[in-house]
Length: 151
Image 1 (spheres, rainbow, N blue to C red):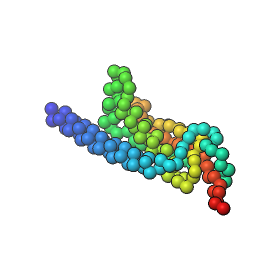
Image 2 (image 1 turned 120 degrees about the vertical axis):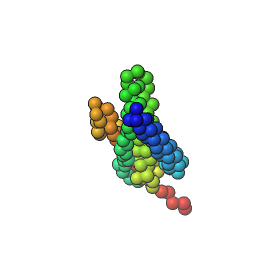
Image 3 (image 1 turned 90 degrees about the vertical axis):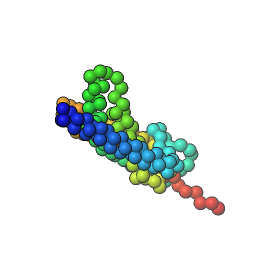
Image 4 (image 1 turned 60 degrees about the vertical axis):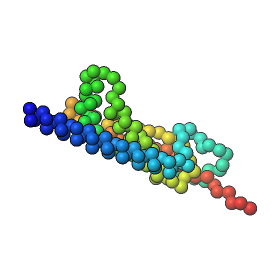
């Protein structure tokens, strides 16, 4: 009985600390997204506008996020009973948004980032082929326009 209570206490602590860390990460993401709102990132192949392009540069941002033990247990329950695995959905949402933010932060002086692509891969398999860590790579072309000097 004591082992079961210890298991429940540890699961509760894991859930609370994981939930706190996830909330803190979302706050950081929201704050940084507001700061970088002026830099457009689009999936089109051509830049927006008719300005002359001075130069371009490949830019990227990547992130690796690990699945915590609580989410892994929750996902295995959903696999058993069926349904959306929301614990993995929030993990991938945070990873995608973080990768795009890191892409933007790598080229804050660009005028636009075009041809955005996002790659997702599992880089570590846990026990029984469960997901352990997820890498998300966001890459695109940073566009720098010629600056017209006022005459």
